[in-house]
Image (cartoon, rainbow, N blue to C red; front, side, top):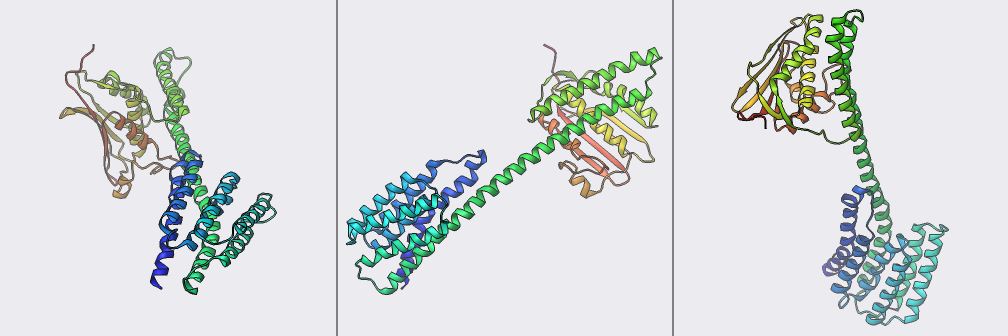
Length: 409
């Protein structure tokens, strides 16, 4: 009895394993590109037929003759008429060679199967009904089969064949569901990336527009000095907006165009640009900038984007103690830019999530500014470290690689 169970189980594994591999292949690889590969299914059919024929035809012809029809049923399921005819001929030849079933029985059986298959193609019967006809026709063939095994052997083979035939319908349904589920996940991931890009462009464009609005609010059209002082700043901020729009339209990773730049000039520009805003909001911000020029290879506009974001976040975090510090120094062949505020600060849980996309502590924030800043600094082979305590403020340390002997060429 054990041998019968083992034999049937092994043959089922030989039969279904190639189709399981093929389904896994379709789900994890092909459907990533919304494509299917017909050759993978053909390979699964051929492999399955080879396994059960190679390892069972001599000792278990009844199992082989019946089980060979399961790949045929799967081919009918795919509505592949040409392959179905070829398999029908092959199975008939195997049956004639290894059994005493009359040839006309095979001919009549597969003609009937093909007839009901045409009804299925024309949607006159369901596939589950086709399986019933399929089982009846092929089980009838076994009445002509001559074997010396026990009745329990015959019963188990027939029962396993019926179960396998209906299992193919489940494989079709759940296989298609798995592929659809994978595609849905992929669509959701693409939608998430698109939403992230839209959030990023909204957040990052908001910063320079806020700066422009601040200066326009203070702008006196009758004051010539205002025009000379504010118009260049407004032009710079508008140019920055155009750069951001161009990047996000491409919906790709942030491009870093490194060139030789003076890091001290970066701080000088931000000091100049934020000076009036600090004054308007009664913020005492101290800039400690080295007297010497510090040249590095970096993207000036991108680093400026990061620094603006950090300073703006620091301003928004301030409460009663409106003090900030922005400083730069060189430590161990690295440039450190520190932005420190004495504001609300963050607790340990908030600090751990600070670089997570969509996480924000601000009302109406998108939670992408710091994430985007981190990506820009990583692209410069640097790092951003946050140190914060609740109600005591936050210190942000931006570290960038520095070579002392960098010179103009």
